[in-house]
Image (cartoon, rainbow, N blue to C red; front, side, top):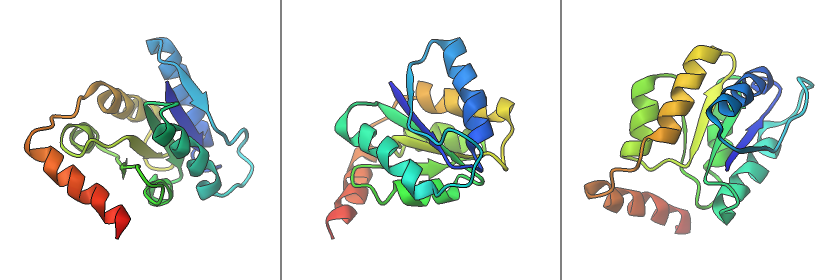
Length: 145
């Protein structure tokens, strides 16, 4: 199960990506927003990220205007490793080397075709582990300082 959430700036792209996930048979839970009416991205990021941390959802994809606000909010939730991506290399390596559990996309930055490609890379790329695990452990330890 994948958690989804957006603010008004990412609402349209989120709705398009729900169709893409449906076409792939990937289950998701939409934590809002439910319209293009103005709302605050931290309010949308929190419940989706909580679902990842609790294990209700495996990963999350969050959408705002740039992806940056959502990534900043998501990374404040203990246990989250979020990355805003707008290119294929970053979407792949944020999983391969950084074991990111949240992908953030900008509805005003990427189109639906690229967003679908980035989501596929994010969901289909496994964490490489090995030498990267020690670095992830150090990143996660920063939450306790």
